[in-house]
Length: 321
Image (cartoon, rainbow, N blue to C red; front, side, top):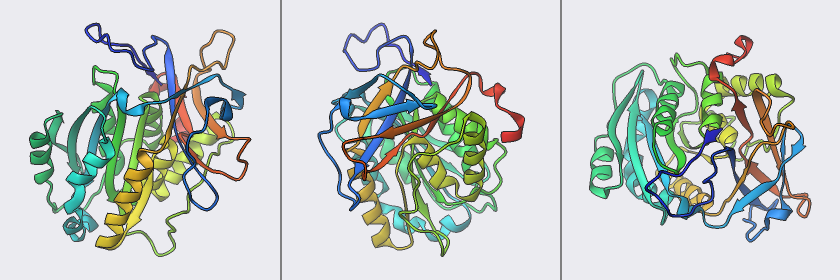
């Protein structure tokens, strides 16, 4: 969760200006045939925190919140054969941000993350950073380390913008030292959404093989998430945070995937709640499972942030690492 407070010099009203802890739940709703469902009202959503219904707020204008985005691109291993397909990445960054005020940082990684360009709202500076992306000769692809680094960059921002990571990588992590449970906890604590664009998927991997919701208690949820990260880091990072996941093998697949991703990003519902898990108004410490349903549309396919961590990351259970 992220304590969100307006900067003293900023008098512009925005949704999350409370001093209390607020959990953001980006939510995408589709019919069972894959068509987006628009114009749903707040009262149509039921959001549960560890099974407890929450009073929610629906932001009607997400673009007004602004966006802090870290573009994280793997440069090692199989990415060497994929870089030629990434020509549209600069256009993709614009599509992700839409009309929102934005600041963008660019990170590349093999065995370790490297900051190519710090946060900037200047298109020329962003373009210059993206232009530095190139393949690297490294046997590792430490995706969890890179996402942890990007999350730390976002956590240090002194504004009220939404936090997002655009991850372009292989599906699996190779060589990270950061514990998966800590990455999961930090993403939830900082309200960071990961949108993943994965290349070279396995033969048995299916684009629409997404799970909607889940969890069987705080520790069970964390262990399940850690195991899933080990199998397909790109997919699970997106799934846990409420982001989008696409994969590609061809230039056409990459371009179509980016179009799909940008379309979904600008057609989601930004739900939020202040946890009311206890009489004090403070959530119990540990991993919390989030579930979203829409009784009016029982067959809808709903993608949403699935969890958040309450309490210091150092309190993570050792058996979940």
